[in-house]
Length: 266
Image (cartoon, rainbow, N blue to C red; front, top):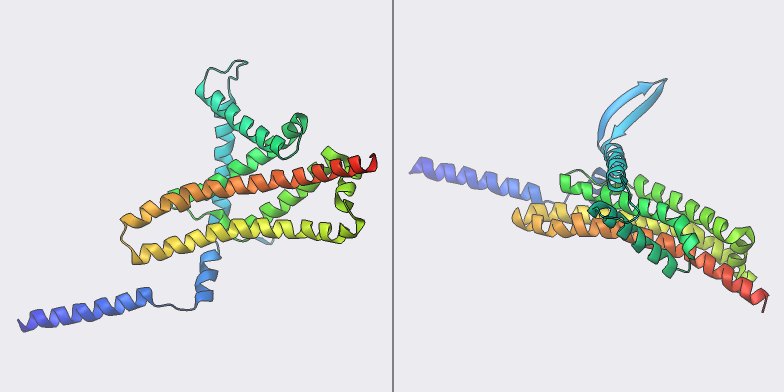
């Protein structure tokens, strides 16, 4: 009996110490920094330069290869009158994107030029977020990933706006309805990539922190159910939001150029 009581006492003390260690809040800044920092999978020195391959790089390139084969599979043996399910699905996605662009003030011809990019970025962001279903950290958890995407996106928005509206039209959108608004319009183009990157990073990283917390305090089944939203629905939603905002930004320029043109000829 003595040995049983001694064993239970030792077990209880060990259990309590382990429990306190698990739920103890340490240096929050260090914990967040550790969560953001990508895991280095491979290091190499080539030509005196250090090359680091992280899990975010592997996931990103893996998704791009998957998209390449997905597009090849979905678009092979295209027919004028689609009979295969994959061609019907592909054309349905394109039609949805075309309608989105046209609802933002673009003509059919303009929408055709924008859809390839916005469709690609929507699929790319959605799939990089969905890799969490395979227990692979989402690249968006690393701030460099959403920041780079946002910068590429705002450059594309400016380029495509100039291409569709012309340099005069783009300039007219910056000074319409008053030239005094020019500094604020320029500031807007600096704020947009910040907003895009913070929105994508904040949602993905916030979901990651929440799921890690849930895995600690709730049984195994509950995190799996909640993860269906954060890993699946929210991952796709972030791609949709990023695409919608990109289309809206271009639509705003075209609308401003059109209204400035009408005001000048009225």
